[in-house]
Length: 438
Length: 184
Image (cartoon, rainbow over all chains, first blue to last red; front, side, top):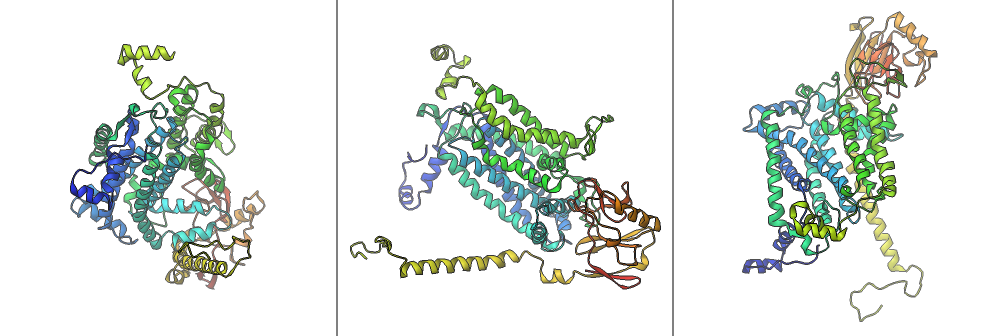
């Protein structure tokens, strides 16, 4: 896909620039004329949406940094000042806070799409791993950003998460002290989190550039998972996908706007409007919604180190997925067996998120007491999250390799064009094509 | 060295020689560069450790005369809560009785207070699970109960139930007088 360029400089200036810095050629080849499979559905629009999300976060974030003070006695008040006194500060902060949630909604859809259509399989392993790195960087950035308003949830969230590293044998305590810059989460911690929170989005932008580069070498995967065979299978990115992405972005921004203007605190926690108090822990500590599945996995394990390792393992397993999956067929459109397990997997992630939002001892079915298994009653969030965590890992480590070896996939089309032409809506030509293929 | 290819890097081992002077210069220069980078990296890493003024603020004095028996006060020490608990004889007896229970982090009550002062229990008020602040007087052992993940501590601050791996830490402290301690 990459390699040949069809750009022809038209004006004298373009010709002059093209032999000095071929930036117009690069833009033309990667963003306008890039040959893209013609059958991409709306699940493929989230890449563009994510780029927009990163842009929104960087622009609003740089503005917020002009008014925010990263100092424990002033941080909370400076955020309130942004909300009340700075011109349009409320808008910019609500865009930034809700923008983080929108970013994660989009990235989760983007990741599930990659899982469903096998976009991580050869030759796109590096593309997938770069995506996993972006996801890790996003989580680190979001976590540190949540600490900055210095409310009760900010502070105690930071305490709990930094203490996770204390679970590591031998070096654990030295690492947490080093991270804190003191003996507890305090001013030095807030300062460095602000510094890194400002830095990491630009690191993400750099890895996004690599991600797009790695995308443009093999080209896009597509809903059939079949490789592009000829130019007939593709359309130029512009105008076909600029328009499609543009429409998806408009719909996405509508939803974004609903949150920013009508329910700006729906995804946050009220306790974070209480200034941080190191001496009182809120009754119920929860992370932001996008971390809840991992928080549930952490709490599912009765052992501190075990819980931490399992939580990081839940993300680490994504990195090796391209080598765990034994199936030669990319798209689950032709893999009915794994498709069922995949939908259960999505449900499992939602169940883990649900468990993470509740206390471990909370009843799943209210008012029903069954019997105590180990440390908790069976009808509790902690047991539900244990079952769900077991399925989470089983899906990657057992089901994915085994189903790939034992399933019988449906017949895969010879080319991207074939199922398009054989679609009932395309009439007699398609019917002929389909019957020819049998 | 060939003089037809100007500027080319000659292969010093073309004839199977031992490392020569040029190799030595390469290795020495490389080692010096690596050493310089490592040496520079350490200040860049160590700057994140507690600074001098942070360390200087690391000890405080606590006046015990304000604490009522059966209660605790919470003081901020090194950014963390410090529990200063004036235990009742009943609580001390319960703690001593717990010495022979099946403890996760075995320690006698004797080892957790200063000799001859069993009524004063000085603890770092940070749950050893993930750092939340346990609530006073709650939980089935009458010690503390952590609100985050339900760790239960007894009246000696020892972990009895829940996910925390260790007892509440006893800081370094000493009695300056009968009614005053110095912590840190």
